[in-house]
Image (cartoon, rainbow, N blue to C red):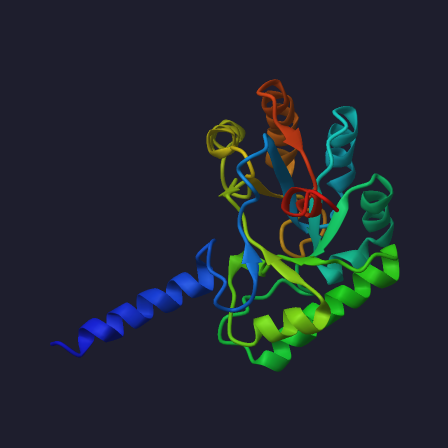
Length: 231
């Protein structure tokens, strides 16, 4: 039975490397910022979508910046919405082109996903992302090299809202309970590559969460400003 022990340990390590929020095995990655400042970053994945402008209105009302990790295919479908995110002063990150699971994919496939998204975002917004968030938070062999060649650094999250399958009260409670100095909060302004996705839970959660965290004294920052405060 002894050979099963190192095998189980290896499997556990690989699982952590693939999905662990603090893992950097497959490329340089961050999951939170410095704890010394009362600041946090609000991030959104899977967009842009037809509902992204609703979120932009809320963020504008409270003068709150955010980072939107966008899928290249969604940017190509809704380039005007992607530009609206940029024009509102928010940061845009790379969230792959077609939102696939990267595990068990070849290095060539992974590099193509990052490159196509990078090209689509730069072409339609004039901005080349510096940050990458893997779809489903899943990393794999070959990702580190692809990130380096694309000039990308990975970002995970301190807390994720599960806003695609939870009620508003649950999302708000989860995110507010995990907010803290340097926290990176993950919500979704799209649902993978779906057209006209229902993100009503996300919109209402942000409507409640933002003023709540502002009242607690938190300052919202982009991922770049949170992780690199001197930039």
